[in-house]
Length: 201
Image (cartoon, rainbow, N blue to C red; front, side):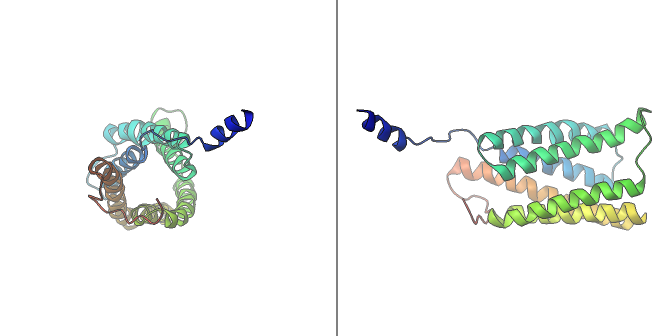
């Protein structure tokens, strides 16, 4: 009897019935990134619209997606969504604290190093996307370029780097939105409505 129970336990399969959190994280990242980079190319001011998106959608929504990826045993998703959610919160903090008179604004050199370290982090995650999908390769590859261009803009004081980064950032954000919504539509229609170029399922 004990052997029979043991065999039944070993034959038990746990089926994951939780929803896919990646579309939430990708759309939160993508939409906030597009709006910030519209500012970087010079079309809008850095106002409460961008900061609000940065705190709640870019920040908290991505952290939530990261925690949900943790439940799905997805180390890449947990790391990426949680980290970039906290990135948005730190970025907003760097902007708001000086405006509140709590501390001085960071220097251009400090911001250059801040953006560089995020670029290096993104570059390493980009390597990981070669095991996932072409769509994510475009997202993380362009994001790494975005961080390095913004860092160059701060290090050199040349606004052309920042403006060019804005164009790259808009494309990166749109690709993230596409990737997120493609996953939603493909799941709803039980077929590849929008291609993602998956290498590993």
